[in-house]
Amino acid sequence: MSVFIVLFAVLILLPAGLTFFVYRRIPVDQSRRRFLKGAALYPAALVGGSAYGYGYERKLQVKRYYDITLPAGAGLSVAQISDVHLGKFFLLEDFRNLLRLVAADEPDILVVTGDLFDDVAMNPEAVKILDEAVDYFPKGIYFCIGNHEQYRNWGRTAKLLKNTRVHMLIGRAEKVTGTDLWLAGAEFPWARDDESFMQEKADLMQKAIKNIPAEELKQTILLAHHPEFIDNGAEAGIPLTLTGHSHGTQFGIFGLPLLPVYKYNRGMVKIGDSVGYVHCGNGSWLPMRIGCPPEIAYFRLKG
Image (cartoon, rainbow, N blue to C red; front, side):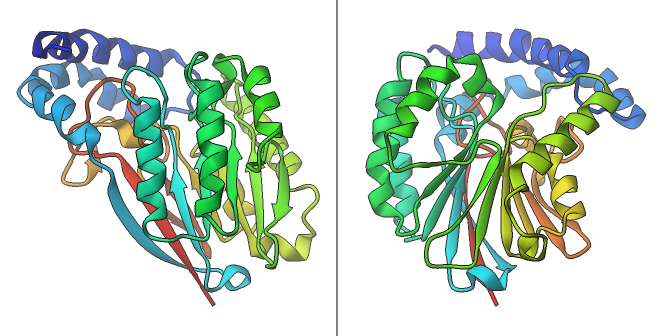
């Protein structure tokens, strides 16, 4: 892809993407609406960094490490990837390399919080690659669904995953073998208006944790693609909720998201005794990132 096409993507597709977010049903407060009114200024500011964002930063995989108090999993390390978006900008070989890079730190568990399988032609081979990578992670790989899986013939991909060793947490929970730690996976909410969105999210949350005894919710990690499940996890007393979807907005400055269209956009969220995390993603919407490199997050569980 030439620099001219990259510049076109910034100047044309970014404003179009912002319009999508404004009119797509995402709970938006008035201060955020005022912020987005000035969004037309951003493409001009991004032009100078577009070559950097396309040619360098989007290819980085920054590793971030966090200590989390969760006695049920004490001594375990959980790695998270999210929003890989297999396709033109993230190839199958890139995916293999990403999994090897994650495994280099020897985490016990890998969690994938949605939007991995985003190319119908690539998905069957991607399923095989993910299954082969189970050998890297002693306590397994756990996957929850994102919105893009549902765009890309999810029924076919789900059938393929059922024949692998990958744990699919689609509206359900499992206890990690040999531990007291639960992992639960919530599905993606599609409702557009605020009231329906909140109700659907609450219903999907209850579905995800229905088989976990109430007294063991404090021994649980919730996986969810949409970052607003952080609120539901905190309300249920779950100590750690891992999410994605926002890509950290892909553009940032001084570690802060430049286009904060979600309630939670990037990094750690602390609510009472609960912690939520919004992963910046490993792939891209547009073929560039500026001030928001892709990441691998590691959570070291402590007693």
